[in-house]
Amino acid sequence: MTHTTTEQPARRASGAVVPVLAFAGIVVAVMQTLLVPVIKDLPQLLDTAPSNATWVLTSTLLSGAVATPIMGRLGDLYGKRRMLILSLAVMVVGALVSALTSTLLPMIAGRTLQGFAMGAIPLGIGLMRDMLPREKLGSAMALMSSSIGVGGGLALPLAALIAQHADWHALFYGAAGLGALSILLTLLVVPESPMRAEGSFDVLGALGLSAGLVLFLLPITKGSDWGWTSGSTLGMFAASAVVLVLWGVFELRSKAPLVDLRTTARPAVLFTNLASIMVGVSFYVVSLVLPQLLQLPKATGYGLGQSMVVAGLLVAPLGLTMMFTAPVYARLSAKYGPKVTLILGMLIIAIGYGAGLGLMSAAWQSLVIAVVLGAGIGLAYSSLPALIVGAVPASETGAANGLNTLMRSIGTSVSSAVIGMVLANTANNVGGVEIPTMHGFRVSFLIATGAVAIGLVMALFLPKPNRAPQLRASSEDDAAVVEQAEEVLRGFRGRVLGADGVPVARAKVTLIDRRGRQAGATLSDEDGSYALAVPAQGAYVLAARASGHGPLASSATHHGEEGAVELDLPLPGETVSA
Image: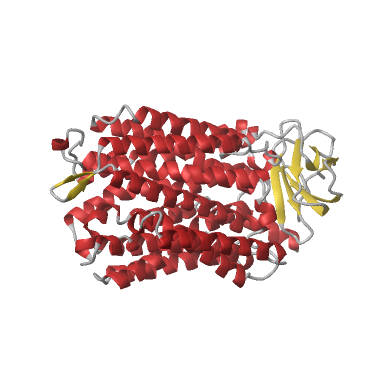
C-alpha cells in the first residue's frame, strides 16, 4: 500500500503542474518589483519622509527572509502544497491592505504580509522533486528557480505603464488578482505531496532565526541612513552575531531543528549557498543601475533620456532571457552536471558586467547588457536548486531550498544597501536633487564583477555531485539519453532485464525507503543499465516497470559503505488480465 502512495504523485502530476508552480514564482517576483517604478515618488504618495518611505521596501525584504526557511520547514512537516497556498493567501491579504491605504503604517503592514510570498519558490521546488519523474526534474526546477527573474523582468514595464497611466493603488489590486489566480490554479492542478519530514516544528529555532536575520538585515538596509559607524548599526550587527551563534548551538542540540546545520555544513550545500549570495548580488545590481541610467535626462551628458515605460521594456529582456535559458540549462546540465552550468553562468555574468563598463552610451547597449546578464543569471539560478536537491535527503528539500532562497535574498539585500550607498556617495547635487553619476554606475558594475568572481571561486570548490543519475535529466526529449554516473558513491546499480534476459531500455526504476517514500528514480539506459544513489544506509525496495513487461518490486539493503550494490532487476512477462 505504501508503494502505491509513493508512486501516486508521479501519475497524478499533470503536465500543467510545472507551469502552475512557475506562475507562483512569477507572482512572487511581481510582488517584489511592484514598487520599483514609484520608489522615488513614495515619500510624496505616503506623505512621509524619504527615510520612512524606505520601510515600505525594507519590510517586505525582512518578512520574506524570515518566512522563506520557516515556510520551507512547515511544508516538509505538514504538506508543501498546503503551505504554498497559505503563503500566497497571506500575500493576497497584504496586497489588499496596501491597496486600500495611502498612509505609512498600514502600507508597511501590508508589504510585510506580502513578503510571505517568498516561501512559494522553495515550496514549489520541493513539490517538483516529490512529484516529477527524474527525467523532467532538471528543466522544471530550472524554470521555477528562474521564474523570479522572469516575473521581475515582465513586471517592470507593466508596473511602469500602470503607474504612469493609472492610480498607483492599481498595482496592489493587480498583485492581489495574480495571487488569487495562482491559488486557484494550485488548488485545481497541483496534488499534495505525500512526503513528510519527521519531528515537530521548532518554534524556538524559528524565533531565533527570525531575530538574528532581522538584526542582520536591518542595519544593512538602513546603514546608509543611520551611518555605517553609528551605535545603532554596529550594535545591531553585534547583536545579530550573538543571536545567530546561540541559535546555531541550539539547532545543533535540537532533535528536530528548523535548519539541519550538519546538512548545511556539507561542502555541496555550503558552497552552493555561498555562491547563491554572490548570484543574488549580481542580479540586483543590473536591476538598480540600468533603469536609472536609461531614465536620467540627456542634459546630464550621460543619461539616456528614456521614459519610465521604455526603460522598463529595455530591461525586460533580462527576465525573458532567464526564462529561455531554462531549457538550455536542462540540456547542458544533463550532459555536464549543475556544477558546470553554475560556473558557466557566472562566467557569462562576469562578461556581461565587464562589457557593460564600456556599453553605457546608448539605449540599445542597455538591451545587449540585459540579454547577456539574463542568460548568465538564468544559468546560475537554474543550477542552484539542482545542486541543493542533489545534496540533501528528500524530507529536507523544502527547508534546504528555503535556506538557499534566503541566501539569494541576503545577496540582494547586501547589493541593495551597497549600491545604494555607492550611488548616494558619488551623486551630484543639482538644485537640491541628488543625481547619480556615471562614475557611480561604473563602480556598481565593478562591485558586481567582483561579487561574481568570488562566487566563481565558491563554485569551483563544489564537490562533483554524487547523485548525478537523479539530477542529470532534462526535458522529455532528452529522457532517452539521461546520462548515468560512472560511479555512485553509495547506492544500487545493475541492469533491467526482460523475461528472456534481454536488456530493457527506458524502464523506470524507483527507489522506495522503509517508510514507503520515494528516495530516487531514474530511467534505464540503452543497455538496460541503471544507477541510483541512496540517501542513507538501510532497507529499500527497488520498483521497476516498462511497457510490454510486468512490474517488479525487489527488496534490497545498503549497509552504508561506499560503493554500489549490484542488483539486476528481471521484469516478468506482461500478464493479461481477464
